Length: 302
Ligand SMILES: O=C(O)CCC(=O)C(=O)O
Ligand SMILES: [Fe+2]
Image (cartoon, rainbow, N blue to C red; front, side, top):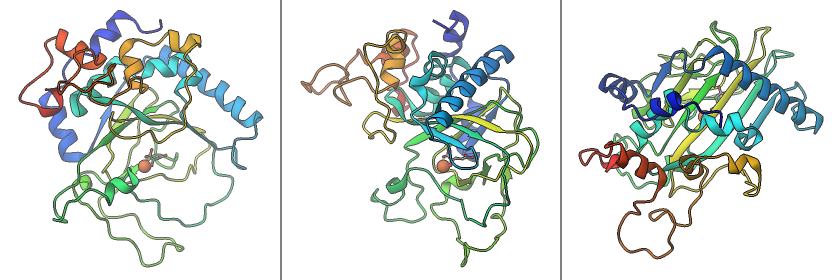
């Protein structure tokens, strides 16, 4: 296993109230130095290998961009990121124990070959989650439903390197004014911030945060790893077939297997016979219970 005991331990340290409040108010958190340089380098090497495989298989776009959905199965290091201590504590701390990854992507974005045509990239994640839920009051924020971490692998410490742009605090607004003509260049919305970060940092964001990708105008290839977490009762977004006879699967911990969607039922983990009680064997719940981290006062940690 590549997880060190120390990192496993960090995974179950509760997050601070200040972080919880900032995430709630801003819709995102920038976490510094969540990867050691050695870990970051090994992730970059694995990304470079997968990138070469994708390009060789003709799955890059014509400018050499690779946006690979469901990438976690491509390396043990990627599978281990699911429970990476300094970040995973935020996932269960903010979303609770009934979670898994429905969506994850590896992004390698070379410098833009030519100026991009104007586009309007501002969105909230979740597609129909922004339309289907019955919330008649337009001022009532819709539920979070999912959150995502983006591990910063390349140097994105300066603007113009294709960083994600966000509107801090905007996640509690259900709509964002759209320009009349999105085929022409439009200024970014008021309050826009481009998330600059160092290699080894990450940012975590609420899926309701209004965000947009940006064009990589620099000479540095942008490398990011995104992992989305959502509730086990929401269907997967990516096609990520898992070979359960593979060494990769054998190397996964029970909690990682939960996070990869293992289970037959979204309330009980193992049984198909719904008996009206939450299954005490759901791995992440069990882990939190054994460590005294369940909390009756917090519904998603009950
Ligand atoms: O590539 C980016 O900067 C943002 C991508 C995005 O919209 C997302 O991960 O939800
Ligand atoms: Fe998005």
